[in-house]
Image (cartoon, rainbow, N blue to C red):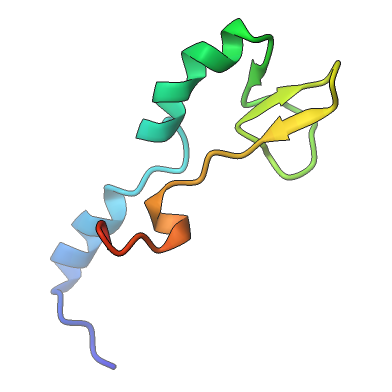
Length: 73
């Protein structure tokens, strides 16, 4: 299927998709850090957004892009 956007439009759209510091991450970061979680911890398999090593917990915050939200995409 042919792309309906021009290369310039597609490039702009793709540049707007961020891998980190997404809106959901920014909203929840303050609360999670107050609860003792580390933000973007290093050395943990899978690159979680938050982790609490003491309780062996990892949390991934995935936005609309990854879940195929019908309202956004």
